Amino acid sequence: MSEETRKKSHKEDKPLEKMTVKDLKEIALEIPHDHLEIAVSDMHKDQLVAFIKEARGIREESPGKKVKKAKVIKVALTKQEIKARIRKLKEEQASAQELKDGEKAQVLRRRISRLKKQSRKIF
Image (tube, rainbow, N blue to C red; front, side):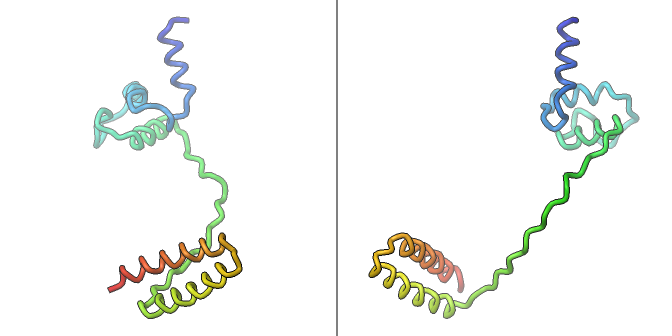
């Protein structure tokens, strides 16, 4: 086998999505086609992959069923509500420090910090 044939077969073994744009352009130029809206040399990688798949008759297989995550609805709080939560969390933090529960106190400190940042963003 000649070296060119080995390189060509090696390139063909890779999935299209993992090939470089240069390799994809070489493959696309070998495919006989009518005048396109965009020349092969001007195509982006996703366009090249789609063009080659269409020319070869490859269907894009959709991945298995994906489990949809429940959407978390964020409710905008008013400044007063945020400050009330901060006061409550500060009380919990003080009690956690008295009980020498450093981990819980640290978690509460981070929550308080986030709420403070959030209160500064509200006008």
